[in-house]
Figure: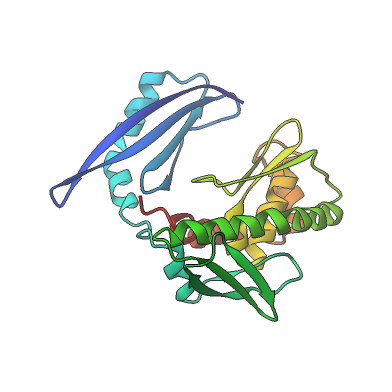
Length: 250
């Protein structure tokens, strides 16, 4: 449980340009130590124990300003989702489905995205309007709304853990979350992950229904569904950066 949050903005100068990094500080009852994570090129999260003073947490953040600047430059450069698919990016629609290549087409007479599922390929046709990237993302979100509920149901039956409600969104830095009331929130971009990583995200959130933290007990539960869960989690952190950067050009 987060007791209170505060936001700070750090400024970095690079090649004569000023860029900004939004930093959210969260005081948490569950935190046992300070945890600083860079979530994207423009967002960092600092979680710290409730006994720690805000001034101490802010000093910790400033002491790591150079680290944040260096690490933020290592994130993938955002690219268009159109280019991603044209370069061979794939979509996976469930635990028993192969990852499929995406065939894009553009038509000035099409008013909305059209999707076709044929053989081992997904066809997406969008209007030629100058907003192709947004239309492709809209098509992907439609696929996520259609197929993620079934993927979740499969995982629930496998794990014996059942959510109360599913929400699908476009979170900037999180693959998913689980509320104390049993609501699972999943990022539509899960369908852009390889099948192994997509299933991992869903099992990770389901495990929170049994253990609402990242304690050893949580990882023990998750290991029952995902062998070597921590290694898979590290792979998700590494490979997922590219997926989170897609289409975030503005």
